[in-house]
Amino acid sequence: MQSILYNVVLENNIKVDALFDKSIFVYKPRVNDLRLIQSTILTLAKILSDHPNHVGVFIIDGTKISLSRLWDEWRFLEKLFQPSFHNRLRMVVFVQGSISEKFGVLNDEERCAAVKIQEDLSKHPYTNGNHKKDALFEILRILLVNWFRKSGSIQLNTLAKISGYSYPTIVAALNKLEDNLIRHSDRSIQLTSFPQLDWLKLITTSDDKRSTYGYWAYRPKAKEDIIRRLREGHTNEFALGGILGARYYLQSIDLIGIHRVDITVLKWDSSKIEALINELDPGLKKAERGILPQVVVHNLTRNESMFNHSEPFDIADEVECLLDLHEARLESPFHELLEHLKEKANQ
Image 1 (cartoon, rainbow, N blue to C red):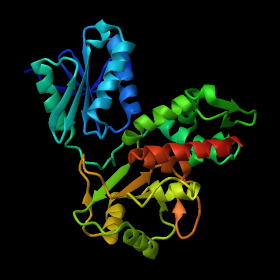
Image 2 (cartoon, rainbow, N blue to C red):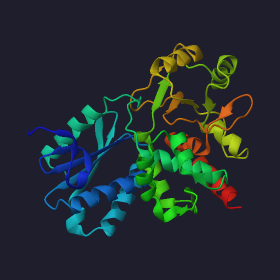
Image 3 (cartoon, rainbow, N blue to C red):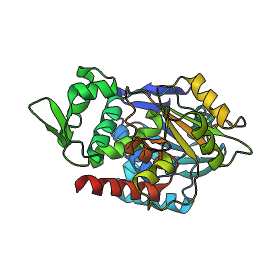
Image 4 (cartoon, rainbow, N blue to C red):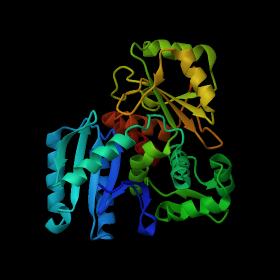
């Protein structure tokens, strides 16, 4: 069997997770959103259009989406693409490390390669502390917070101060958002409206771009107990996001209970994060891939937190809370909060 190459850069600076002979692999863990499947397949299709002698394999490592829904999506793709093109696509679903379902025709070598790739890439822990910084990702988040809050235009030097990026880097990022921007003569900018396409790109890549640390325990303390411990020793050093943050922005949001505790911090080192987790519950340990965390710490890398000040806790910004809900696969509350924030910004 030929060797598998990982993190391969193809022509046009396109990066893929793995390459085996003429098979291009894209790997996604914890896929619970049909939109992520759709966007990944479309991205893979674009890559294949530039590589007519290759096939594309999408590895889904764990999902809550039913097989019937996946088959419906696969049949829809059959109608979307020409048969000769669709025949070059495959989708493989893994559950607990074993192949659960295959879509498209995999030969034996492709199947063995998919098993090996899943085994290798699934070894990465839930911790995503070594994320790749992305100026466009961060600049868009800041502009969206500004838009949600109806704060008007923002000076480029202020954007640089908040984000920590240089002026040329910011200009390059803004050029990619040109269709949704108003540029003023005083070198300030603002979003004209909600940037739907750029937002979709943001949420589909957020798991890879955010610096996230997930923790779980066999016998976890009650979420209320964890929140009480947070209140006792760390006021003003962090903000709450996720479900608790969503309730700050929309009290009527359709959420029952606290599924997990999302904590947002600003430029903490790993030792400080570990110390906090140990104080909250000594039984908590890092959550590996496939294990749902009970406490999650999101470490912002920009210079300013953009927290909303509240009592007894600060609240993570609107975009951060939305991304928390999306990451936790709370799709209905995610859309409810998003529509509320959009409607409020447009008033």
